[in-house]
Length: 486
Image (cartoon, rainbow, N blue to C red; front, side):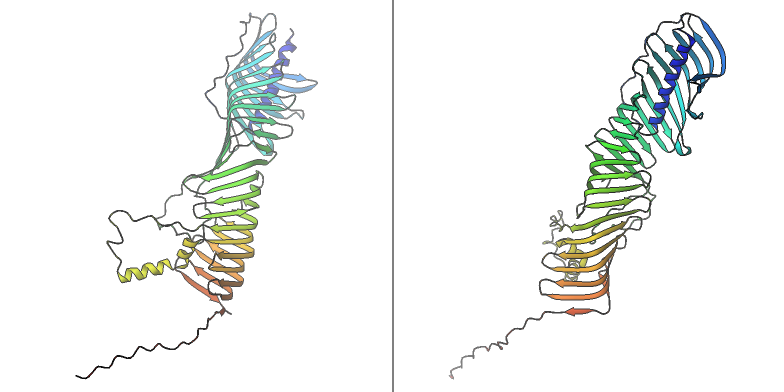
């Protein structure tokens, strides 16, 4: 075979490596225990033509520059069916516009024309120029280009693009169709995110990627993420400030995850956080990598031991640190369950409280916070915004709240500061006491749940329902029997 045969093989191999490079910048895989196959058996080439000190050897295809090779030695056998390149310092691949797309280095490259196989092994290093001025670097243990199948296979690939790292155990890429399949596990690591799944399928021309389930996404945060807490939740005990700890938020689904362009689409997503007892479920979530926004459609549900919140649609803006829930939004505060019996040695019957202690306990039980915690409550509105950096909840649009059988009210706007436990109601506030029929009205009210203090802006209107009772008079005691004189 002529020298052009060797050139064509090298070109095909280079094209495959370029495909791997482009794919790596998208979705990679995690190494598993699978071992790469042994390199294809080749005959020991008979000494033939040897060229040493290759500097800038240019290969052309269809009149354009495709490869430029820098290597210590290239050897062709006598039949010119096998070739070996040693110590490839740099092999540069050029695109149609003449710009270098990627370059690689490796200790050894072997080409077998009889089998149509190009094998590169050893410490393979690849660098590529990506859009937006980014650069990709990657390594692999072994890569094989199969000319008859026109497919590239690579094992144990790992690399980095900007702030993204990836690990791939096994890759098969068909460049003519732009189809890629990765198996053996996939892991993508970013400073604040890690994605793992068993396998990935991709169509590179369409920028379409499908991650096979189960898919697990872990989010890392420098500070503990703030969760929506009920209005009446007991504030955490004060502690000396500690160094921020990295928290992990997990997103899991048992359905395929689609990555199309800048959008990641997942269904039936469950969100949890290590060290916390809340759970968020969503029927459909769409994450846009460019805007860093998450659109939740088809219903979202937040639940912790004390609260359940539901909304048909939600949007989370990671840049502005805002979560917006579109109504009807419903928040239910669960009634607190009966407390467990006291521990041994602290039986209340054996140690009855003093009058002062009993009065204090009664006052605590009757505080607004405790009444709400024990009996629960319900809040509905058209829109709710949660500023989780400021720990502030804002509910607007037909805000209504009630405690079944006791209170029912409405307002134009509700603001709750979760850190300070301060509740503010604004605009046309009306509160009805259902047991006796009393009504309270004012334009603005501020309630401090920690101190149980309240401030009401004038004009304040209070309507009491007074029940009249008939005056039956005082009952006269029967006359005492007269004593009989002796």
